[in-house]
Amino acid sequence: MTAYPHRNILPKKFSLKMKILLFLIFAGITFTAFAQKENFDVMSFTPVRDWKMERSDNTVSLTGVNEAKGTFCIITLYKSLNGSTNSKTNFGTAWQKLVQQNFGAGKPKMGAPGKENGWELQSGSAKFEKSGTTGFVTLITATANSKMANMVILTNSDAYTSQINSFVASIELQKKPGTAANTATSPTEQPQNGSVDDLQSNNHSISGVYIFNETMSSPTFYAYTRMALCRGYRFNADGTYNYFNNMYLRGNPKLTFSWETGTYTVNGNQLTIKPLKGQNEEWSKKGEDGSGEEKFFGKRLSITTRKLETVTYTFEKKTLPGDNKTIHLLLKYDKETIRDAGYTYDKNAKLWRYGAYEPDAYHIPPGFKF
Image 1 (spheres, rainbow, N blue to C red):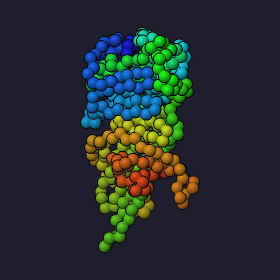
Image 2 (image 1 turned 90 degrees about the horizontal axis):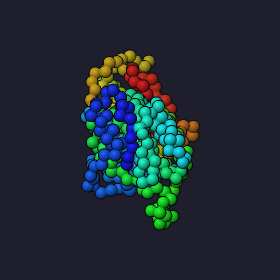
Image 3 (image 1 turned 30 degrees about the horizontal axis):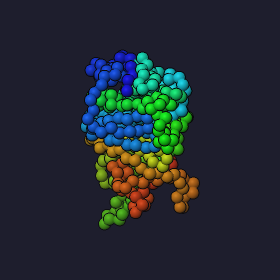
């Protein structure tokens, strides 16, 4: 795939090496790929070795994460759609819906247009900052015969430059739709194209706050042992999420708190959560809630690395027996996860439940934005 973004579009913190190599990507440098090609819609590509690849009806995403260093790179290919005959118009639409709405990036710095197999290519890049994560986002849009196909590259480090180089260079676009090379393809093999409106995220179907709260008490010889935990998600309409987990144990001088931020996508009843940052913390206790319980956060005592886990759940939103007012988010996965721990609704069905309400203030430490 060939495209030509401007050479000076990266944030200052990105190295000169990354600026040069990313420019070479879009200047048409060719790399030899030995791995087997994958096909998706109007594109074929060579997957990045050791990266996680996920497919849905409308996208293919490839993710590389270094948990120890807190770096990531996510490349997403989008199924071709009906669009304008104007490649600049299609790029503008895709930038607004895939980049600005999801990551809050500003106006892109554009590269010179390119061509491949009858497709017109437009590319642009910008810095983004979302939920405490900063990085660099690139969009490439290919247009031919009122069709558009898109690719978004999101990263916070130049450590992935060689992988990005190889992947982009491996992409091959089919011959321009409607040309002789494509007319022999049977109708059942042709991609079913929606409209540009289909670039709108399905995230609105799940956006909101969902909390799991539980208090457990058991009698001992002297008193009651009491444990309370609260964990929850905030799914933002722009495709980002926040997560926290707070646990209190009577008699323990410390509170435990964990958090994550990242991105999520919804495809039908499938919810994929991709954490980008997170950590585990211990805090001292401070203050009482009126019943003698020291639930409030004092000072942060320690920070440890948190394992980041990408999971694709099956989800459902519904009311539960005995509570016909609260909408619950039910998540299903075939094994317990780091975020959700043990199943909280139906162990046999492998379900967790989260209610649609805000957490109490004492569950959130000072300075943390949920």
